Amino acid sequence: MVSGLALGIDGEAHAASLKTGTVAVLGDGIDHVYRPQHERLYAEIAEQGLIVSESPTGYKARAQDFPRRNRIITGLARGTVVVKAAERSGSLISARMAGEQGREVMAVPGSPLDPRASGTNGLIRQGAALVRHAQDVLEVLAGLPSLHVAAPRPRRSHRTFSRGRFRPTS
Image 1 (tube, rainbow, N blue to C red):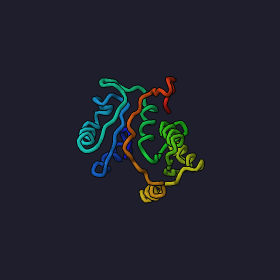
Image 2: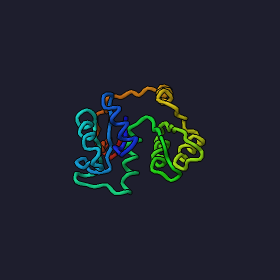
Image 3: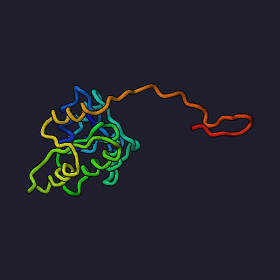
Image 4: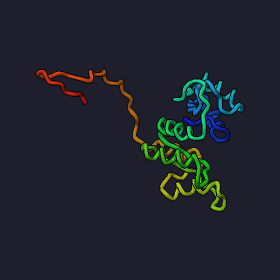
């Protein structure tokens, strides 16, 4: 499970997946816990999971940093589940990024009368997989092709010479 260690569903999902694997992607530097309420959870993830940040040590995230962080979250995950999102929500930015990265987008429906569910309901209208419970997520993920991880190829020089002429390598 990959998420951003935010309050609410993010923290609950991290806590629930400590034993099976969780990755917290921070907008802050890796040495800063954005919400003091998550200090204990942060320590548990550091011990049992993985904490990632592309921000320098000591950095404190600003609002504009979170879409960048969400790009990493969606890039690390095979699918993104949006639980609740208003029409203008950071979760919808994540859903868009996931789609652009070729990841599965899933959404939990909400009441059509609740403005906090208009974004998730809109995602479903646009073709996101409808999620009623965990089994729906597992079925979507089971339908994805298997990933095969191979060792990287040895790096080649950026230049080769053939018959005295320079040719860049691909």
